[in-house]
Every structure is written in C-alpha cells, then in structure tokens.
Length: 120
Image 1 (cartoon, rainbow, N blue to C red):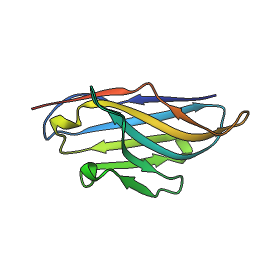
Image 2: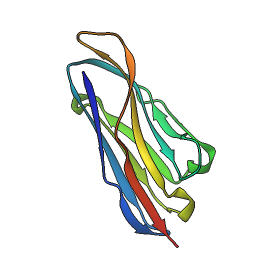
Image 3: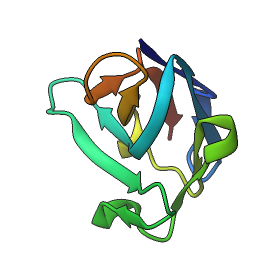
C-alpha cells in the first residue's frame, strides 16, 4: 500500500557530505511524520531525525548541526543532508513514514535501507 525507497547512500571520506532521499509511493492518502533511522553493525536501530507534516523537526543530539532533514509533501519525498560526516556515522539508514493509505489502516512503514560508509 505504501512503499518507501531510499537512495543517495554510498562511500565518502570523513568530513564529506551525502544527501539521502526517501520517496514514498503507492495508494497514499496522507503521510504524517517521517523520519530517518540508522543501524550500525551490532547496534540497535536509532533515530537520526524526524520531521512532521508541517515541517517541525527534531534531531538526535549527535546529529544536531551536521544533519538537516526536510520533506516535500507535494512529492511525498523526504531528504537528509549529512555534512561533516564521521566514521561513526557508518550505518544502514532507513526511511520511516507514519502514513494513511486510501484503503487500509494508518501504519508505520519502512524502506529497505541504504548503506552509508564513512572512511577515516
């Protein structure tokens, strides 16, 4: 009903930048909040940043000042601009959306993830 596809991951040197995108598709009535999560090997999935439909944002403390989350409601797309990347930012980054499809119930949806690797 709702599909999320991330893109923009890759390999970058420490101090570099990447921009992730998450495109939502399917029979979508409305997308409420959206967020980026990440999971490093051997660690639990953690929140990176989230954005409400109206554009209110919140960030994990370690990302404040380096990452910027945004969304385009008309395109059902969310972005994450990541600057000053560090090796500890290496992880699989997942897109999440709280969405209401035209048929079905409101639910949380996840993308398949995109790998971000930061070399030292």
